Every structure is written in structure tokens, then in C-alpha cells.
Image (cartoon, rainbow, N blue to C red; front, side):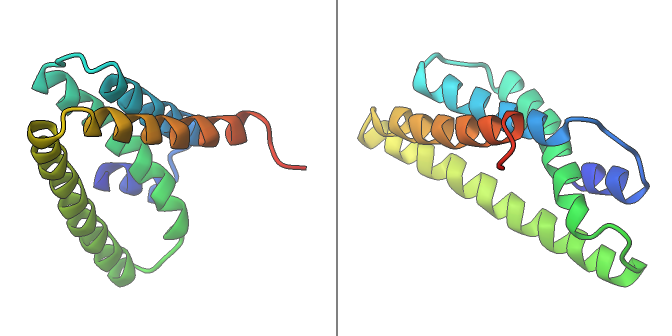
Length: 126
């Protein structure tokens, strides 16, 4: 994600980055809903690719900043996102053992968010 922010700050233009972000959320949700055992390497690749584009989208909020706030933003972003991803992974693993449908329900909610953002990217608000 930090690399995505750095790309945005370096004025690299990636067309349809928000669309790719929405698609990545939708794909992650679908993978949870269908309850297929996906290899950890695939999840890792998905998170690396999605993280880059999510970071690129986050970079919009810091674009044009001085170096000191930029470094602080990147450090905070990486710390918060790491805690969030690890926390969600541990919670999902725990819920999967206790209540096997919980991750599928969470996947459905994630699909809803991804689909909503995807539609908002395709059909702009009036």
C-alpha cells in the first residue's frame, strides 16, 4: 500500500484505480462467500495487488504534501492497515472454527460494499 501511495505522490497516473479497488473488494468477498479453500499464496497475491491500488487511492489525500507529513502519513497508514488486516484475519479464523457460516456472511457484506462502490464508479452520481 505504501508503494501505491508513493506512486500517486510521484505523479504516476493509473487510470481507473478506484474501479480496480472496488473490484478487488468484490473479488475478496466472493472468495469468502463461495467458501472455497484458496491457497494462502493466492490471498497474498490478491492482497499485494489490491494493496497497491488501495494505497494509490489513499495517496489522493496526501498528494502535494511536504516530506515530513508524507512520511508520518505513510507510517500511520502502514501501521493501521497492518493491525486491521491481521485483526480481521485472526477474527475470521476464530469465527470460522466457532461458527462456520460467519466468514461467509462477512464475505456477503464485503461483496455488498464492493458492488456498491463498483456501481458508484460506473454510474456517477448526478
